[in-house]
Image 1 (cartoon, rainbow, N blue to C red):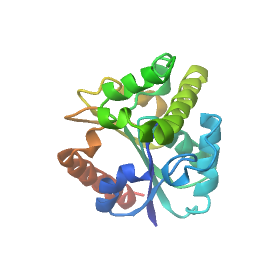
Image 2: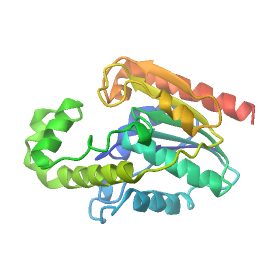
Image 3: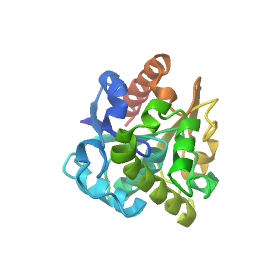
Length: 235
């Protein structure tokens, strides 16, 4: 069976890919991180490695060695998708392709980009990348329910980038998608160093959350469906 596994951004949730998943022609699994949204009462991850191992443990109950696996991740989720994909390949799973959205490779990300002194700096960052409107950022709901997980995600992301070393290239197709107005990742060609195959890059109008815009959503769905069909056909 063909399966697409999706990983959201820092502070994101499984519903982030609701529009995309409805149009993809395969079984879609949307990850929900511990301590987020529907898993709000569960403990937050201590580190990115903790998150990756947790995802691996969960996926072993949802995929088989016979499945044709594709992984998609947005922003921090792209790093998680790559690391999970690498782990799945090492465990002999049939990983066919990675779809990485709005994220440079770890060795190109400045280790101070996600190092914030206080919650006000986090709010300014979220406002800059258009993640949330002011009405949400200034609400009690944001402070009590969303900020703790976002703060923790940015912490483990920053620690991961700071400690990241080496560029292990994997034998897997990588498709990169980014927006020209994204201040965090308006080009992603550096991922070529992480693949033994020629990567593909696609550019879209919009900002860091370009894949939410209807026109872009439709284009991405069409692209992934063609990619998945082609990958399976030549497998």
